[in-house]
Length: 115
Image 1 (tube, rainbow, N blue to C red):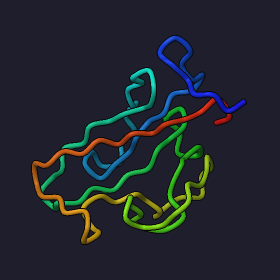
Image 2 (tube, helix red, strand yellow):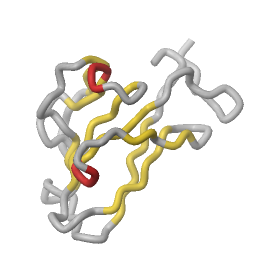
Image 3 (tube, rainbow, N blue to C red):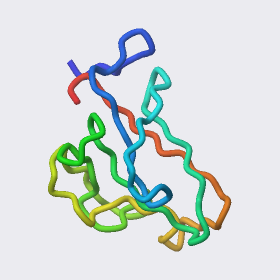
Image 4 (spheres, rainbow, N blue to C red):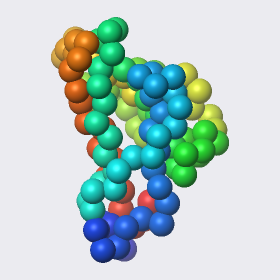
C-alpha cells in the first residue's frame, strides 16, 4: 500500500538538499511529520538551483527530467541514482516564477511508503 508517512511513523531514510545557495553542499532536510522541508534564502542572482539526495549521497540523487525544472515546467522526477549531473530544479528562472535577492521559498518533498 502507498500510505503516507507520519510524525509517528517516519521514513526509514533521510532526504538531503544540495543547492546553489551553499555551493551544493548537502544539508539534511527537516521531517515535519508529513514531508521533508527546507526553507531557502534567495541570494543575489534572484534564482536558486537544487537536487535532492537520498541519505545525503550524490549517487542517490533525485532530479528533474529537464534542466532548470520548476513548478511551471512539465517534468518527471528521476532517480535515485548518480545520473543527474546538470539536471536541477531552478526557482526564479521561469517568467512565472519571479524571485529577487532576499526572498525565501520552501522546498517540500512528500514521500509515500512505496517510495
